[in-house]
Each structure stands twice: as structure tokens, then as C-alpha cells.
Amino acid sequence: MNTMDYLKKCIFVLKHYIIMKTVLGFILALALYPISILAQDTQPAWVDMIIGTYTEGGNSEGIYTYHFNQNTGLTDSRSDSIRASNPTFVAQSSNDRMIYAVCEYHDGRQGLYAFERNTTNGKLKEVNWRTTIDLANVSPSDDGIIYSGGDPCNVFVTPQFVATANYTGGDISVFPIDSVTGGLKLQSQHHKLGGDTTVLAPHAHCLLPSPDGKYAFVTDLGNSCIYRYDLHAKSLNNPVLAWEGENGMGPRHFVFDKDGNHAYLINELGGQLVVFDYHDGTLLQTQIVMADENGGHGSADIHITPDGKFLYTSHRLKGDGIAIFRIDQESGKVSKVGYEPTGRHPRNFGITPNGRFLLVACRDDNKIQVFSINSKTGKLTDTGHTIYVSKPSCIAIIK
Image (cartoon, rainbow, N blue to C red; front, side, top):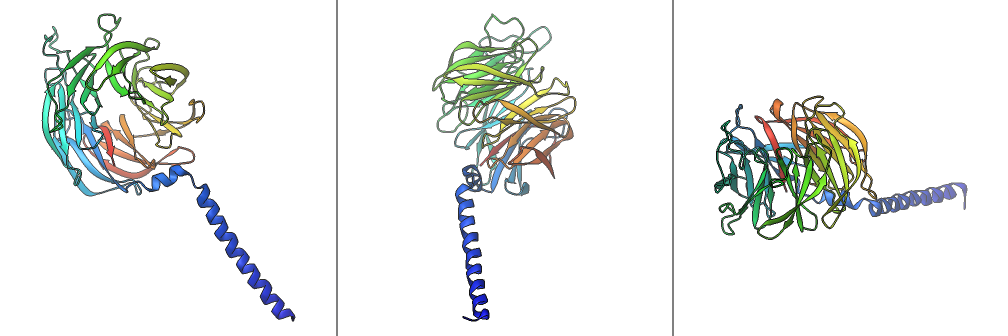
């Protein structure tokens, strides 16, 4: 074999070696590709975004629907609105066919809407409305406020009933669901938080089912505690005190992690993030960290990314923004990653099902701000894409 033939053979072998190494590397990378990312890539590109608003003191018509691409972070031309009064919080049924929205007042107009959702084009159609007032036990106060069922601010949906947490009323209203229309039947239960045992005026702010479906938890911002109810198919029963914080903490919203082993609570007034171990109805506090480092006393919402790695809390009234935390996958405890400024008054926010975007309802700037999420660090980047809506207060994202 002469020198030229030898060199040609060497080049041939080297080329095949490089090709085989590339192919093997690709196969190995695919095998190690995170399952959570693969799951994210199988999510539908387009989702519906339902936006609740304040209609008092603004130009909002009520509830708005936008078509949002969770891969690009952009909306298309498809949008819709439906009239409703102060629908400041919205929630969907498990089959996404129904949307339930509060009617946040304390002057006799307080109530709950039921809307049927067209799953093809996303349009909403009102089915009915029910008052959150306990009509069997109601009388106006000296200041003209009807406290019973006053200022419903959160909605809890089960297959057979819908319940509202009523802030000014300090109570819970329960409505059976009509199995044919999805609408609301007359109120079947009305629970006053703490009965006659509360020291301060109760303020119900959030209702949340336990991961095992056996219980429902409700925060009482006024008395800085959490109550637990037995969750039955058609009712809430046997309230007990599940956790008691320090006076002035003001528990607002909380969430469970994806495995159901830990719970996380954001306190509106104190600004603390509280971490719990959870097991069979028991909340065991394991950590407390300051989330609101600006002292605004207006912490609002809390959510976890679908992969369970990062947790976010929103903060208003001073240094408005989103606090970012990493979750330890074994202990459930959190560590601070950073803080991202937002528009004014970030009352509520949502995370897309694929975990790529975080959308913030900036009420006092009349806009939805879109941030991309760094999947490795959890940090947020403002995409510059803004959805303008008058006084947005809540975002529900539907696949």
C-alpha cells in the first residue's frame, strides 16, 4: 500500500468514527433528556387564557378570553369578552366546560356566576348567577355593609359543588352544581369561619383541596390561621384548626407541590412564605422565610412550576414584583433565587402548562405582563409582549 492509499484509508476511517460518535452522542443525549421537558414538548401549543377583572373604577366589561401560544409567548387575533360585574377571581371545572367567577361586592350584589365555555372557540355563555349571602341569616349592619357572603374572592370547584371564600363575610358559601347545565343550584351550606370563637374578624381568602381529595383547607387572613374541612362529595363538614400563625401574618393563598407531600403559604400582611410537610390532613411547619423584602404588606399569589422545581410569589404596594425560590426536591424547603420587578399591583399570576411562561396581572397598569422562565435557574425575563386589559385581577390558563 502506497502512502496515498494509506492516507485515503485513514481519512475514511476517521470520517466514519466522527459520524458514529455523533450518532451515539445524540442517542445518549436523547436517553438522558429530562422526562419533564419531553412532557412539556407534548403540550398543545395554544391555550386559552381567562382573565378576571375589576369593573368598578375602570373600563372593563368583565371577563376576557385570549388565545395564547405557550411555545412562543404570543397571542393571536382570537379574543372575546363577556359582561360580568367585578369578576375578580375565576376558576374552571375539571372538564374545562364551565367557568365560575365571583361577583365581588359587599352591598347585596355579592354572588357567583356560572358560564358555559365553548371548548372549540373558547367563547363563554352565562348560565346563571347566585347570591353568596346566607339568606336565612342576613341583616345589614349599621354602616350599610351586608357582611354575609361579602366580597367573595376565591372559588373552589369539585365535580358536584362550587364553594366561594368570602373575604368581608369571613365565611364560605357552597352551591351544588346542576348536572345537566353545569349551573349553580341554590346555596346548600354556609360556614362562618371559627364560629363564635374567633378573636378578630375572620377573612376567608383561599379554598384549596388536599392532594388526596379528603380535605379542603381555607385561609383566615383576619385570625392568621388555616382551617381544615372534611371534603365530601356534596358538602364541607367538621371544621378544625389546622395551623395557627402569629398575629398579623395574614395568610392569603397557598399551594401543594406536585407530589402532595408539601404545602406552601404566602402571608399577605407579614410577607412570609411558610413551608409545611403534609400527611393525611396534617400541616407541619418546617420553614419560614421572608418573601416580601420590601415591606409592602401586600403579598398576593403563589404558584409552582409544573416540574416542581421553582416557586413564585407576587408582592404589591411597595417594590412590586415576583419573588423566585428554588424547591429542594427531597426536603421541600426553599432557597431564594431572586426578585423580578413587575408592573404595578401584581395581584395574581399564572404559569403555562409547559412551564415556559409566567403571566402577571398588573392591575394598576391595566396589563398582563409576559415573562419567560429559565428552566435551569427559575429566573424571569420580560418578553416585552404585553396584553392590555383594564384592571386585570386573575388569570386562569386552560389547555
